[in-house]
Figure (tube, rainbow, N blue to C red):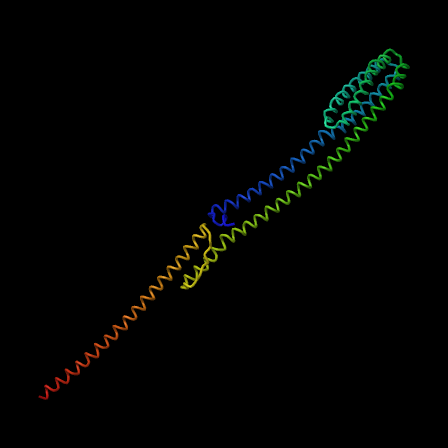
Length: 312
C-alpha cells in the first residue's frame, strides 16, 4: 500500500482511472464474448440443424411427388401428358440430387449420421437408376404392367427405406435443433450472469477507488485545513501528525509542520526578547529612580546652603 501512497497525485489518478478503464474493457470483452458465442450457436443452428430439417422435409415431399407423378403417368393414356409428368419427375430428381449433395457436408463431424446419409444416397441412386433405366422406358413404350410390377416389387421397399432414413435423419436434426436452442438459452443466461457480475464488480471497484482517493487525498487535506484555521486564529499549539508519504500531500504536511514549528520558534524568540526588554526597563527605571533621589538630595542641600548664605 505504501507504494501507492508514495505515488504522485497524477500517478494515483492514473492508476485508479486505469483500473476503471481496465474493468470497463473487461465488461466490453465479456459482453462481446457472450454475444459472439450466442451468434456462433445461432449460426450453427440455422446453417446446420434447421437446414437439415428443411432439406429432409423437402426431400420427403419431392419423393412423394415423384411417386405420385410416376403413378399418374402409368394411369394416363395420353402420351403428351405422360411426357409432361415425366419431365417434371426429372426436375424433381435434380432437386433431390442437390439436396443429397449438401447433406454429407453438414454431417461430416457426425460419423453415424454421415453413414446413414450415405446409405440414403445409395438407396436413392438405385431407385433413380431403376426409375430412369426401366420404369420410364416401360411407360413410354406403353408397358404399364411391367412398370407397375417394378414400382410395386423393387421400388416400393426402396421408397419405404428412403422414407424411414429421411424421417430418422429429420428427427435427429430436430433433436439437435432443440438441443442447440436450449444450449443457446443456457449460454445467453450464463453470459448475462457473467456480464452482470463484471458490471457489479466494476461499480463496486469504482466506489472503493473513490473512497480510497477520499481517504488518501481528501482526508489529510481536510485535517490540514482545520489545523490551518486554528493557526490563523493564533493557536500555535496545533499538532499535525506526520504522514510517512513521498507524494504532494506528504510534502504539504511536512511544510505545514515546519511552518508551525518556525512560527513557534519566532514567537518564543519574541517572548524572550520582550522578557529581556522588560528586565532592562526595570533596571533603567531603578537607576532613574536612584538618580532622581540623588538629584532631590542635591537640590535639598543646595536649598539649605542658599538659606545659610542668605542668613549670613
